[in-house]
Image (cartoon, rainbow, N blue to C red; front, side, top):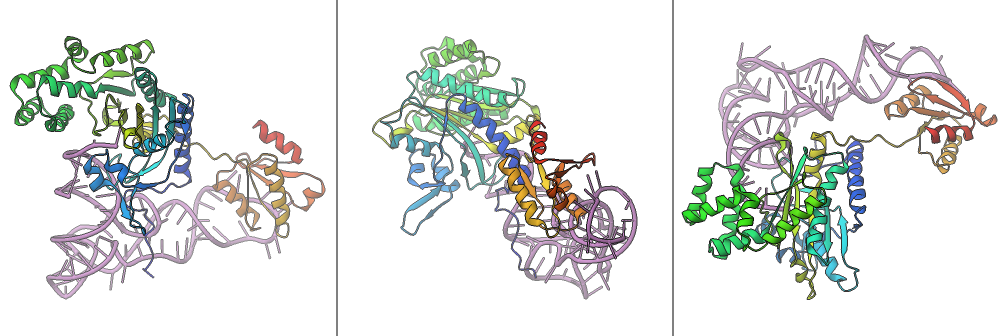
Length: 430
RNA sequence: GUGACCGUAGCUCAGUCGGUAGAGCUCAGGUUUGUGGAUCCUGCGGUCGCGGGUUCGAGCCCCGUCGGUCACCCCA
């Protein structure tokens, strides 16, 4: 008898048993409530997309190695969505003329990536996506997206000691590469990757990597100046593209009361090529979990893959795995209990009376679970207890004839005889 | 993709020097049919992840493989 199938979920995926599902649902509800308070509307889309929409802008590495893809029976190349941004862009482009601008949409899709599962990274995860398209003023749109990034952890009770939002602007780095370092464009990604590593490696190693990438001593010095001197460097070098908008963004954040949450971070680069301006990442401030929780940025050209009309866009994606770890580590969300009122036990020969009672109580607004079978009464109480019920309701023929039910409190052991109307007021006031 | 550690009952794990497999919890029963929880008793439950090798003999040693965890790599 050892031909049984495995009960384990597929590599890198999770089953959600009721308790875990309640946690996830509670987390998503707070996320949804927060973004809806800013006017974002919920959307969804198919799990699979034509492979092409990822080939256009997502990096080749992701397409070749990290996408679940297949050819369908009609010879179409199909991909399971690894991220939501191309899908959202496709949907906006589809109705680009008729959608009232600005467009504020969010979604919580499940996304798939074929990669080595590790801490905070699985093959399937859920990701809150928020995007703002077609803003009349991009500066204000950037501000709003950062506000959202702050308000989401805040909605769970986090404060600025728990997380920090680090912002940068892609155009600044690109402009430094082009104007100050005279780097050819194919060198940009390599140097950007070295900058991204700065915090993880020693300074000498950092400079050595830059040197072997072909940078002169003066170029390295300039990059050090850029990384170490924050906004002072920007103010000295306001001929660099993107500097005025970054300084104005920081000013706006301060005026809006977010200066404790958001900092300028010259080292923030981010991987995707489609970013055209603002980029940001949110970090856990706990020293044991100094990890990027989520991030996003401005991607003004992505819509152009689908439409001749263009539309500016800014947004972010937040994975449920890392964010749930953040919430647990900072004790910000407990698994909520079940929302159930009472368990109905039944007597042999009177099973259908119990079921009718359950139906009446449900129509009056109570959540009622019944025993399924008139087993020994003690067992039925035990069922209710094990399932976490505080109350058991009983109505045998004696009670039915007198128009009452027995209501038993399992934690105190008290039992009393009440009418169905009284029962409703007891639970409504509880 | 690279490396380290791990995989024994449904769950958490023990298993000495290589000598025929253990505990706790869970689950199912137990004082006769309208009242649960504690204790006690009994019972169910394992091809030791899978495949090969060494050996008289392997849960234990060796190789491979699959899965998990962690750290890198790549990076949402």
